[in-house]
Length: 453
View 1 (tube, rainbow, N blue to C red):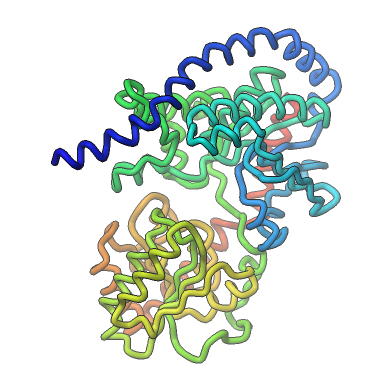
View 2 (cartoon, rainbow, N blue to C red; view 1 turned 180 degrees about the horizontal axis):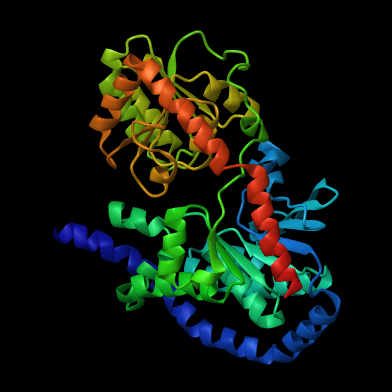
């Protein structure tokens, strides 16, 4: 017990200089902002007379430049909208290089290099101080960019740091901004005990006792002042409302950022089969909150009753090594195939011919499986029940219940005609709920309202 307590205390002792510098520097940052007021007011005037109402949008979201380049423009082109003449998709602080890539005449991918000061603090392990400088620099750079490029509207595709950046830029130059709620990780925190937003708050002495209040405050602040807030599903909508988003400026806008080939997929004309054996499929990031290890455990339980079936896993991520080690320990490792990250065309082939798609906690890959008419098994968590009606459009099992997941795997395979009928009902529901044209129409309406105001 004593050793465990010591192990918990030591990391905080080592981080103490970081937290001390953070506390000492923070007031000077505030003073710096106060001295910047003349510049801010000048930028506000310039933006008002040159950019206000201009149908150019800047979308703020952290992304991996390497991932976008590897997977191609299809990953981000769904963010285009016909009501806008120009869109910039920006990561303002996390890239190793300065990069601006033209994907279309009206669409650019923009990555700004992490400032040298921030990199130095990160290298010596001063993460909290690095975040403070990173965010402050990003806010001023985005403000300057919006004025210089005559951006008429901001959009934050995440409601933590991107939303805070949009909020402060809006305070500076009065630019309207929209926030998307695409996750409710407080729910996962209640289930798993692991925080996902502003994690460092939990490590700062004194503040750590107030971290739940602080996190909710930081998340809710931008939502209360946004021109509009989109929840990607019912759960996100309720989450935004609980954080303080006004109901009159809050609505559901379904996610449509998946390969267009899935929207137009015809089950009567499937692509070429990728394998000559029947298989269950997992598609997703190899990250703890996607529960790939649960899928392997469940397959191990089900495998003796499914002697001809394989498990195919598509994706890559932080816990890939853990996944590989778990496969090595499996009694059925010769029937588990891990493919890593694959291009969208390959994913479509494997999805279309899967007997069952296993989606413990998923987003676009769950929708893609349903659009292909593939039976889906998912945990009954977060937004899944929006689209999966248990035993009618797919199958839900209790969260983290690997035994139940294994039983449903066996049931879906052994009662395939029943599972397939459910999958086809799920396909029709997904086609209506995620209709791209309807989603773009609703999105356009909000864009135009923001620009007119």
